[in-house]
Length: 632
View 1: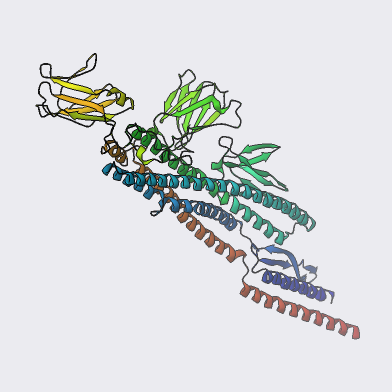
View 2 (view 1 turned 180 degrees about the vertical axis):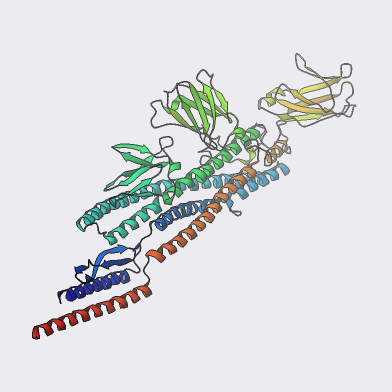
């Protein structure tokens, strides 16, 4: 009777455990991260008898967590990528919308500026036309300032988000380390039977970390899960969690980077190694789109300010004075010393020599004790100069001078255009100071006999005005076929019809046709010529000139920026949707394995109920048989 009773009791216990486990599954059907549990049972050890082995009933071996590590790894990879792309897109979309706004954006402001400048050229004596031009110039400045402020605010927001994300990662990593310790202790106390609910909690925490920053997991032989980030830096090792820290970029303190704290020392991790998750998306957006946009708009502001200032200075205003700056001159390039330097930033002096050659990029100057290496960071193009180089050196529209030789291993960040957009401002408010006229007037005497004509003059420096005050008169000498000026000593210029003549290095003009002996041509101050639009036409013509990097116009350069930001934004959106769909597909596959199916659990509940009832019946029969024996 004892064997029958024992078998029935074991069956009853197994059925009860099955009912309890099924109830646990049903109760947690909607719990995030919960993995379905199942009872693992086997036949108990049989008893050897003279007539063979007599069954010993059933034994419960373990309550197992239904879990597929391969699907989990795939899911985490897709999750990290989807989070990265989605964060990139959420940051890039407002920038894309701001730049591509066709109503109140920067592109219509550029067009309005040059359209109003053309109106000044059409009516150079008109004060209302000049006032409208200055109004459009101020609107352009406001748009550029606004774009720069938006980008700066976005950068500050990225810094704040990096800081809060790191704090969240540290908190989650600590919880994972604590769970590692609890799980190990409980497994040891329970003969290596896994605490399934804690395993689910740990995996859920790992998934939350993975959404913040892509992690790699390694499961130790004792069941602990170690986490690694970046290029192999450990985040969790057993029951120990490492610490991440938000720290200024040593090369550029305006950027917050991810630093790793080890044995009390803090080292900044290369942002290129931190991929995946919200943090990876923020870093990629900043490196690939935000800083590019900041430099491109800064470049546009610097080139416009400097080139238009130079042209306005070559003109004459309504008061008969030489033109001044139209915009406030752009600031000198920023020089930042690396935080590890002992040599200060003042060791370098950088100035803009030719704005049209400036690149939309930052530069790094490093010194190894033998050579200086300057790297253009936008494309990683490097130029090496030996330490015997005579400074200044000219590179990409900059003059770079090393005032103090740095220590070997030190470096400096050069930012030629980074602050150009935020500092752009209009320099004049008086419409009369728009220098629309050419300061040098040219004329052919009405008494000339020949048919030769003289073109308007083109000047390259303000000194030209002094060079024609008093007027310079050229007289044609038919004997020598030359134009001879009235200066002392005189200058004789061989005459070739239509050939460009450069006078005193700053004035260029042409005489075309056939002059007769003693015909005269005059260069003089253009003061009082309020109807002259020569310089206004020259400034208006700059709209289509390739003044940005010598390859494209202002609108063309801005169009390239819109295209770049739009492409990056669209790519992030498409890739994010693709990775999100892949993540959902893998999640569905994972849920088909680990998720709770209520229909299946209802069937299991019915099965275990019947098992319980049958086991109870077996115990009842065992009791009746025992009572019958007692009655014999």
